[in-house]
Image 1 (tube, rainbow, N blue to C red):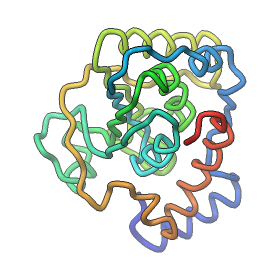
Image 2 (image 1 turned 60 degrees about the vertical axis):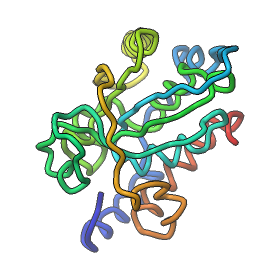
Image 3 (image 1 turned 45 degrees about the vertical axis):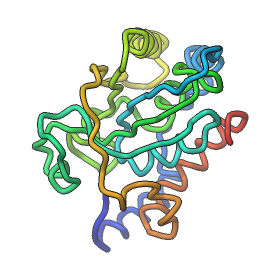
Image 4 (image 1 turned 90 degrees about the vertical axis):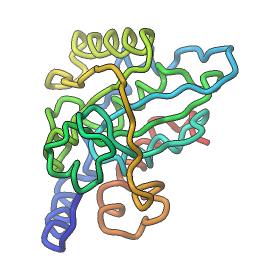
Length: 221
């Protein structure tokens, strides 16, 4: 995440060259995406949790908040060895944690398959330990599965995306068991909605949100 004027100016220039600062691959045209995005929701009335790391959690949160069936999104950290880490500690890249979002959802309204479709659309899963200019293991692409069904689905769809060669490069998304989630500081929560005029929000998050809305226009709240 960009903290000074130099990086903001560089970011603006990048966005002028690369419209929407988004990945080039249109995953929505693939057979695997179609299968994920049209999976039948459950008939069991309760809420489930999905935990995804897709780079900056401000971006991930802003996109998943838009989906029908998503009850709440919390930004935080998972996958490392340090208990109760702060944002500053995670930024050092020494805690082992990734920036993630805990997505609480109603499986009768949206399936885990559909959430996976959104996950692989909202970032570039072919970049190892980075997303754009955010570099480090804390920005890795990762699915932390909560049960065997989530593990199987994430693994199967990742394999199919690679077999279908949906992306120019292989999907490198980590698929690991969920162990713990540490919620980030309050100022990180609902960040885009409360800080939309900030340069990072305007030049990075908003273009991603706009693209996300177009792909999932029939699934928005």
